[in-house]
Image: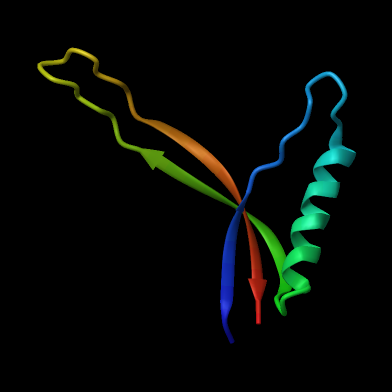
Length: 76
């Protein structure tokens, strides 16, 4: 079995967008990949820690932080 993982980042207009627009974008992603032979499995959250940047002699130093990304999983 073969797997494919694709980042899913929904975009909405803050004045007109709603969860329905997000669902439509996910449905489009699923349909596009099913049309080329992939089967949608699920949406996964992947949490990543970005290490701090000490800067040069402390100038421009940035703290570390955690970020979460959504990944669409498909199989073939």
